[in-house]
Length: 143
Image 1 (cartoon, helix red, strand yellow):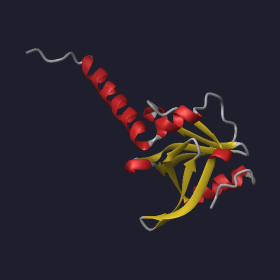
Image 2 (cartoon, helix red, strand yellow; image 1 turned 135 degrees about the vertical axis):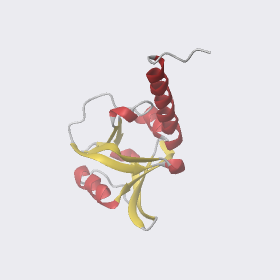
Image 3 (tube, helix red, strand yellow; image 1 turned 180 degrees about the vertical axis):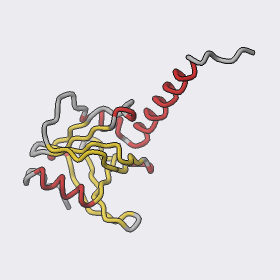
Image 4 (cartoon, one colour; image 1 turned 90 degrees about the horizontal axis):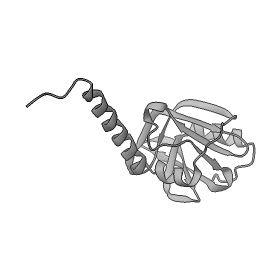
């Protein structure tokens, strides 16, 4: 049996990587959010880069999410390497509700979205305060 060409192996790795990252988008709920809140434009608000979030079914994104906010809504974008199945998102504040939770002994905010209620998005407390400040009173969804 002949061994595969050395040029074939990187293609297999890239295909496998894309498959796994795409699968994570289904598990976490990012894909569902993308169906409702996909963003095609350019976000001009302030960004917090390389942030960590957690979503449903134990899916976590460690230091690979850019999160922004302005008076209109919440912006989320995944780093390029993790982008398959993860389109940039923009969610209007009118669709966002939040509550403070304690998870694993840490204070966090859990955000929910009116068009994708089964998808939670958890951020650390300091990042939640950043979002609230950037909304400048246009986000009344904190409980």
